[in-house]
Length: 467
Image (tube, rainbow, N blue to C red):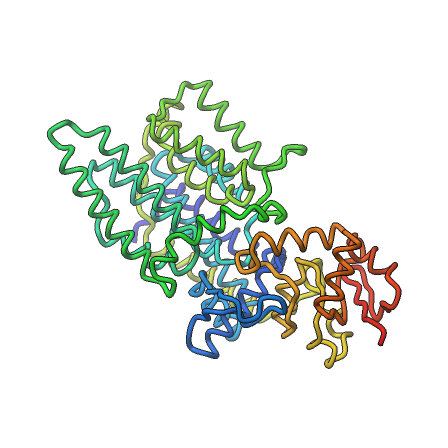
């Protein structure tokens, strides 16, 4: 059997490296929302349907709510039940490995050797801060595959194949970012129309519109139906999202990976005079704006921008299309063996979640069983873990459930606003509180008469109201 050319080992090594990091670096799990996603998935597995009202919180119990990422949550929960935290790590490691493989396969059409390594590094680096065990990571392979399909359709001067619309069916049930896929489709459809000769424009409109309608229809096939199509816009329109770290603007007070990648791309493009088609340039500028406005969007902006700019940058650098051979059976066998060994090692060395900023395990262990069912006022970051442990939180990461008015009030409570805090304690009959020790709300609680500390460590302080 023929062995592949050496350049094939660059993407293979990168994919395996990221797989190994995901398996053995627990920072992938350092997000409180992971817990409530697992709890939601477990609830659906137990009950056999997607909830239409909230089954978890103290303050919004029974309020209208649907698990818009239900399929991701079911997959996460089933994986957790089968393999524990090691299983979750393997699931997300596999997703990230697929991301690298898809990116590298496409970028390898334009770059080779050190340039391919640099292109991969500049693409992956801005994504790393948001590589967390949450649904948005599971759909990254769909985002990249969708973008590649659109780019190749444009290169062949045709509409995407109709079967590709089925990706929207999967995407819309996994995560709300399917809307961005629709925006990409509109951008490339417009580019196709503007580039078409006058005699072909009706055909272009017909073919791309047919694919667009098929994609929209597939995206509407969710438990939410057509309502699910507008949910992402409602979410992004919430003003209270500004209080959530991932929805805040990009921070340039310190040099970060996104700034480095952006600077390198702009330098190379401007210095070498890269010629980017107008629609794709506007798309790139839109991606940069998204990432600057909300830092979580760097994860979307980086891979899509890399795929869109690959050909123009390669042309500007004067690099001919690399002559590559497909990977042969021996290479695929080597990768499969490496993946299997790493997964077996992870399963053979199971780990339990240690306490952390979003995991106040010891603190909850010290709360008497009877007290756990009583009303609690909690830190926002602890909400997901409380759900995971069977405690109804005052607030958690489902901002869409609580709404702007509630979240603005909560931010006042923990600012802290003494009057708002006292009113909340009284009106909600709060029996205990749990906040990080450095939280302003905990500082204020420490000064409240009649509130006794029953546990404290570096991550959480628990106080109970004296009777």
